[in-house]
Amino acid sequence: MIDTHSHLYDEAFDQDRDTVIKSCQDLNVTKIISPAVDKESYKKMNSLADRYNGYIFPTMGLHPTSVGCTWEEDLAYTKQLLFDNPTRYVAIGEIGLDLYWSEEFFIEQCEVLRQQTMWSLDLHKPLILHVRKAYEEIFQMLEPFGGKLRGVFHSFEGEEKHIERINRCGDFYIGVGGVATYKKRVSRLLASKVPLSRIVLETDSPYLTPSPLQGNRNSTENLPVIVKKLSEIYSVSQEEVIRQTTENAERLFFE
Ligand SMILES: [Zn+2]
Image (tube, rainbow, N blue to C red; front, top):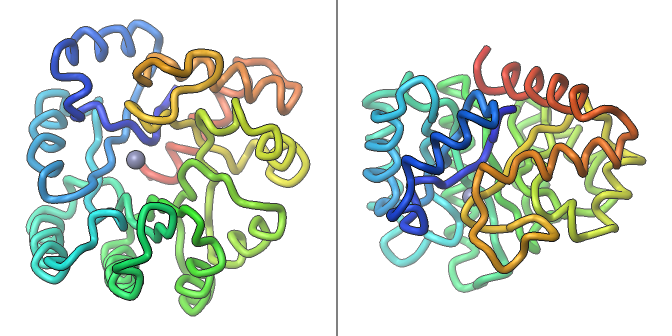
């Protein structure tokens, strides 16, 4: 299994991080992708990725909810880290648009997304996209790139009409985690409109704990819960879910 979205550098793991990672390895989680959020996260993320080199893979990007009045210098710093050492990062992310937490810096969010999307083309790296209450807006940003983009819509919770537009943006996968275990609408949509060949596993640890474990910290150790849910959604064995989603994640991030 590959967890394509896990913030194990988060302070929620400060007390037992190594134990958690050991147990992920015992569960046969073979790789973990560790998305960046903002300046504060970069250092913790990179030192964890160095410690688990070849197991935890960092990405680089400025998260939409971290776009504020210092966005220009924050973005310049993000760019410097990325372009100083591009081979270190397996993706540009997590980046995107978020109108759920705040609309205050929405224009700036769009500009930050646009620039980082250009970097992904320059460096031939996939995007990890965070979208909340802003699907229409993100398609308006991404469609002008003419279907040349690739990446993952992380923690997808959109609607049927969005699936076709995702495909129009380029070579995209759908990241499935906790949301699919508690939103029936999402699991039904996946079953009817998204083939398993377009799904990657994720947890978004320490957030989005899957049902029935809500109320607890989420961790990559809960990845088997997502596998089980997908095996029900697609009526295939858990082994098949693991085989196909691992192949998908390898193709997107490691080829
Ligand atoms: Zn995240």
